[in-house]
Image (cartoon, rainbow, N blue to C red; front, side, top):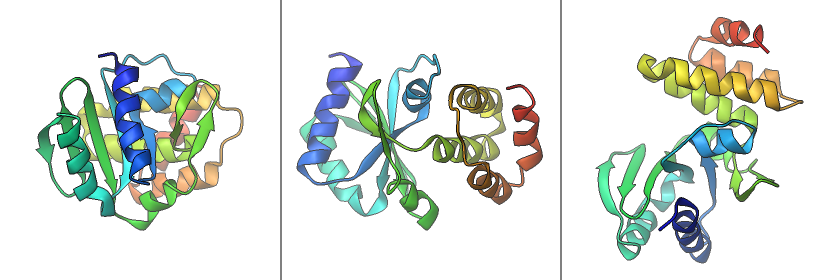
Amino acid sequence: MSLISGIQQFVQKLDENSIAYAVIGGLAVFAYGGDRTTFDVDFLIHGQFRKQILEIAKILELKVVNENDEVLQLSGAIQIDVIFANRPKSQQMLTRVKLLKNLPFPVVTPEDLIGLKIQAFSGDRSREYVDKGDILTIFRHVDELNFDLIKEYADIFQVWPEIEEIRKHI
């Protein structure tokens, strides 16, 4: 099964169950102009749908590899990481999703994707260069960005000076 057909099956089940979602991670970076190679797909889904996602995984014969309150990692014909939107900021991201020409699935806004990248490298500095590279890619390929919102995300993790440094390389 190809990555795209696997995503389509998963998304079809989300749609059938009226579960709002957005693509995040490397595939979303690709949608905004990046050239990241990715072997899995990352979704942002409201935490209230955890039980339904587990049921969908069972139907699609996806094995639960890792599960906690924040993340559900699924493996099978495709690899899927579900990040649960459990807090108001991430839940708001699901209200701002975009449909882009080059991807048939909704993605978070570029600002929200940057916010998620900030959270990722702030929580795990071993990811720093990949995530900062993704942020730079978004800066270079998206013409209009709401830097007030990006600063709001950066300030949560006290990394605004690092984001300003990345901006110097646009």
